[in-house]
Amino acid sequence: MKYNAIFIIAIGVMLSLSACKFQNLIKHGSVDEKYEEAVKLYSKKDYPRALQLFDQLSGVMRATEKAQKIAYFYSYCYYNMKDFTLAAYYFKRYSSSYPNSEEAEECMFMSAYCNYLNSPEYTLDQTVTYDALKELQLFTNTYPKSKRVSECNDLIDKLRLKLEMKDFKIAKLFYRMDDYTAAIQMFNNIIKEYPDSPHREEIMYLIIKSYYKFAMESILEKQLDRFTKAITASNEFVAQYPESKLKSEAAGLKERSQKELELYHIKFQKRGNHVPIVIN
Image (cartoon, rainbow, N blue to C red):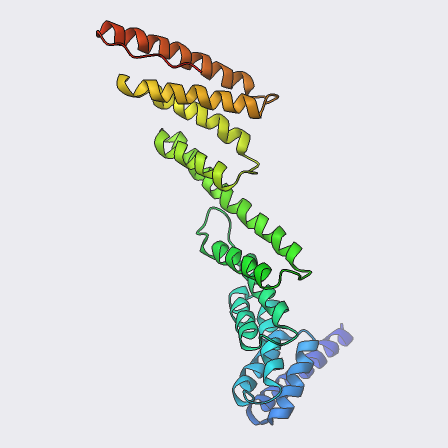
């Protein structure tokens, strides 16, 4: 116990002396001393204290040869401290300020990657996700032969999957709220925007159900078009997913739609009108 207490006191004294030394350097150290200590702290992964020194140096060494290196370290300090918003900003500024440097490609990628890391859950606002997509695409356009292009494409796919999930959940919410016009529009937009969506099969089935339910709630004059679209959607579903577990449900909706169209035809005849029945 005695030795442990002595050890703890010794550590405390050393930390106190180190802190005093650092504060003295901050206040009275020369530019070269601060730079040398900042690089040492960075190499030791003491990013918060390294950042303090680099922050002081970035102004006074702006026109020197070391300004570029300071800007590089500065960006990575924020990155390693997991402040990806500021890291993205400083990486982007570095690649813009030093476009011909060896690190320009790396920093342009890192800026986009930090935005990727900042992308929130799909339930939240996706502004940062769109920014990340734009910057990742810009990187692949700027450096099409880069070894990082493959990684960029993987990151783009993950971000698009997140956006697709958000749209899918919203479309299903419209469906559950019986807002079939909005649901159908969003479901069709997802298929168009994300043709390889993992939810494509379910989406196509929900389009059939949406048209069918929409038709059932519609006035007589609107039913012909909506039941016909339910039948068309069912045919497209079975053609694309002949082995689907939902095949029988899709066929059932088609059959019910056909029967409703027959009733529709009879109702119009009773009114003294004749409307050609359309059954695909």
